Image (cartoon, rainbow over all chains, first blue to last red; front, side, top):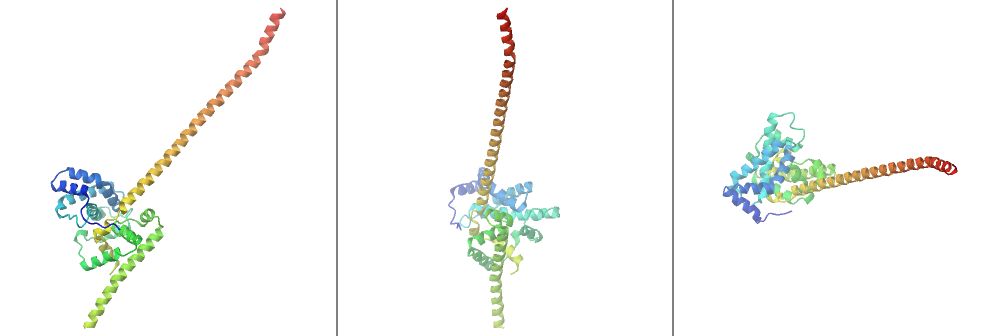
Length: 205
Length: 92
């Protein structure tokens, strides 16, 4: 796994500086470097709705423009920052679309994307226990690299099992069984902790 | 922890986990696939072009052979007439 060690990408730093100065050239350079990547991620979530994909990528640029002062190059690369924005923007867009085209929306999106449509809470407003999040991230970091990649592709990038199988040279069945097994392992780890808490509480009573 | 909570929490992966080039790998793979397809399709069109050129050349050669055959037959048919004329001319 590649670990981010701080803002060493000079090109990205130049882009950020230009955006901070309010120079439009910054966005031109940003688009030249990352547009394909952003389109790819948005398209894998939104399916073949090209206009919506374009809108989603434009919204991503706008969000970056509005929040550039919050960006910390020591925490994440510009690429990762953009990936997170475009992913969440695409999911929120999918939810908006589902309100208008209820019957057609489920044609070309994955089950996880459908889950996000049904669960109406806005991604940016969800609140979780910090300890739980940190534990989950540690558990994922300790997974085998194949399982880690499958989980990230399936649950973060919302890629279909068919797509994952194709790009990872595996069968769809292997992808599904590996992801289901990993999910169970993660759930079990959290259940263990819950049981321990209950046991401790009972002991003190 | 239920599955729903787990799916929700997976939206909050640490940036460190997202620094891998999964998507770039996908894009490169797709690019390679497209270039392979276009290469093979250009090979197919090249083969088709070659085939049609060979067909045209064969057709021209065949028609030339037929033409030569016809000319030979005409000459052969005309030859006795010429000799007869020559014979009559000589005898007279």
